[in-house]
Amino acid sequence: QSTVLEVQDVTRTYQVSHGLFGGNKELRALRGVTLSLKKGEVLGIVGESGCGKSTLARLLLALDKPTTGDILLDGRPVSKTKTGIISRKVQPIFQDPYSSLNPRKTIGSIITLPLRVHKIGNAASQREAMLEIMDRVGLSTRFINSYPNQLSGGQRQRVAIARALIMKPEVVICDEPTSALDVSVQSQILNMLQDLQVKYNLTYVFISHNLAVVEHIATRVAVMYFGRIVEQAETEAFFRNPRHPYSQALLGSVLTPDPELGVPDPDLGTVFPDPLNPPVGCAFHPRCPKRVTVCDQRHPEPTGDRDDFVECHLFGPANS
Ligand code: SF4
Ligand code: MG
Image (cartoon, rainbow, N blue to C red; front, side, top):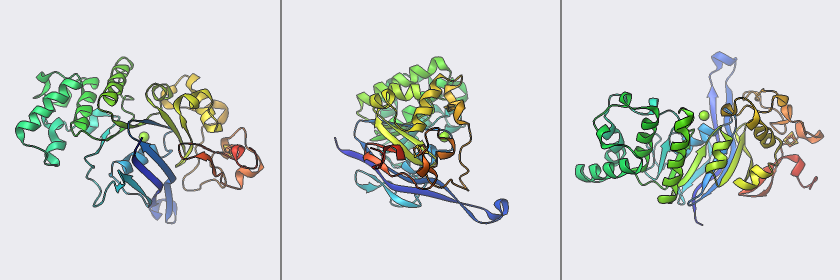
């Protein structure tokens, strides 16, 4: 299996204006993320809001640049030039099709836009590609001249998927692709995404709060906490035996009343660390029921290999 996308020790820091916080502070949204994505796999990324999932998605899409570290697609930097131009080989499907579709453009125009931006083909071939992809995502051609507000939420998400796939991308970054949809529509869209992934041998990065969705679609799972990946494992092994105490808490949350929000076990409290005053040692230690003496002193190093590791002192050399 060849590596398609590589994230090499990436950090992303934002400067927070001193007016608000009485001093120029650094907000580190990503604190050192390393990932290697193989062709045809579906990497599920889970974690609470604010853990850095969407920042990572924006970097993978070259909508933003890492502060340090590199992101390589087929061995080349995702964005060689400037931000804002999404690589043709990495395409997004975002959470909210309502806001990601231009309300003043027709569906046909929205779906073919990436081809026009990247000057691929002519009007006739673009139309042909549009008809083919609309068929693949189950959109009737009667919508070609409609506007987004004339479509249902599920249909709009099909438009967003068609727009991403018309580029024949290698990698699709799905950021909460079904979270804004009615439950009844979610599984249709999810199953369609899965069919398309197999059919086109696509590689997905699938970001979701919803662990049941990730278990269904992902081949591998990465758990993010406070700007880092704290555990990575094959999906089946992960759900059978989550190792990191935070992963265990997240899986416990599957049983809470609002699994959509990924609310952790109530016993853990809901306090996410203040990014402007990060905890010393393991970032999870203020909430961790299993912490040991060293946890608030030293940051745990990952134990395992690149695709299968856990970052927790319980698994460190001293304890294994
Ligand atoms: Fe808990 Fe310590 Fe492991 Fe962090 S390193 S998850 S505080 S046991
Ligand atoms: Mg998000």
